[in-house]
Length: 252
Length: 101
Image (cartoon, rainbow over all chains, first blue to last red; front, top):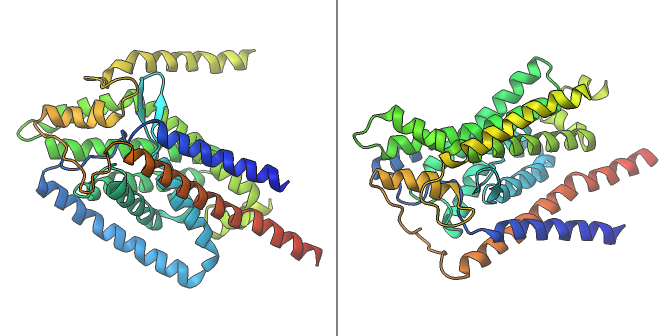
């Protein structure tokens, strides 16, 4: 039993390592120096209040209930790994990565999800040549904030209408991914357009994202739904504690 | 059979749509399986006259980046496994012990 578990962990580890190693750092984050300095500063300033809110939420949660620490740790590792994992999309012949912020926002709330994304993006910008320090604020806005908010509110809205847990998780993951790339397109367009009109360039960038991000969003939706359903089966009490489910839904 | 067809036809159209849009993002491809940063982000930035700078800590040198990605994968994978175990297995054991009492 122990050997089987060890083999499972090792296989998972090797699979993750292989996925990370097969392609070099070629994915979505906006690279160092692509945005003009005023825009880079503006996006960093815009991200600050969200990160402060995230810190406040984390402090409050730690003061009330330390038992959620493993969940925060798991989600931080999950977001870090999959947001720098280039996934090949055969229909487009290109690679890109999921974000994971939809799932983290559903399970732990958008505030802490902002912080998790910030930490993941900071490590990637510092050591993995993935994104950049000057564009960190812009990437946090796109992946951390827009992804988390889109995932969280989609899930909550669908659950109000009593949509099935798996379907709500799927659509939340899907929209979190697409919102991230839509936000990236907007941030990039605003930064690079110069004197050119905004909308035509934005449309061009959005259309260029479609072949890769359309299927990848579906993959992210499936991953999010799978994780929510798995936790529902294994730790329904945790989902109740995080207000993902009502206690009556678990006992029913 | 009907259910299979009802699911299969939209799926076929979806696949056709994906294949037909495949060229939309492709600019000057750097080789097989380029990232969307090259085909979309950097491509449009270059067209608008902006080029990416090397990162502040430039680890994209030789096999250094490969090493760092492997290290990140190992550490991240270990952390994910460790917290998953704490969250799921240890909690189940605790619950089992409590129910036996």
